[in-house]
Image 1 (cartoon, rainbow, N blue to C red):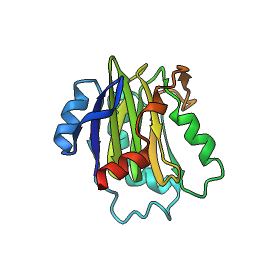
Image 2 (image 1 turned 180 degrees about the vertical axis):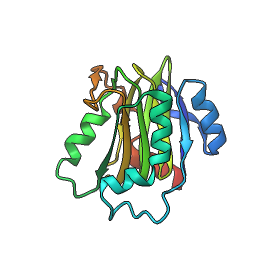
Image 3 (image 1 turned 120 degrees about the horizontal axis):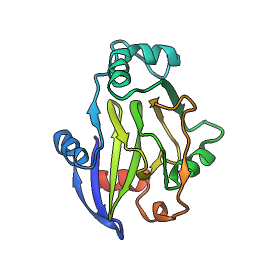
Length: 188
């Protein structure tokens, strides 16, 4: 289940939570964030298929976004609990940062937790299979893939060099719930 939690930046314990897709989409739209739900590619087994098959299965959606926003490249990133660099990658993504271009991720499988720090609010967006989220250019944010990640995402870039982060040096990400903590709250 996709979930949006809106926190005051100085109050990471209490937040207003939304779990209905239309509510999440509407709240995120007010801050310039695109949130969509794509249909899973017919007959696609993401764990067993190569990146090209994944991109082909979603080619209509990808083409639409390339035309609409001028994306130059699309790729697939897959991470699971056996990935040898999972700890280093998690720490890199958990550090608050910005990008000079806007970022788009579509969850082919698995889940992850995006935090967007806008003004005096922090928007925590739990994304899962079928969700697409954008992060506007220059918006401070971080991403938690969890201690034992399980995700496959299509990433779209306007810059052919791909993922380039500008780290803020803030430790705000350490004060907000991790993916595991949020999942625990949702099942309690």
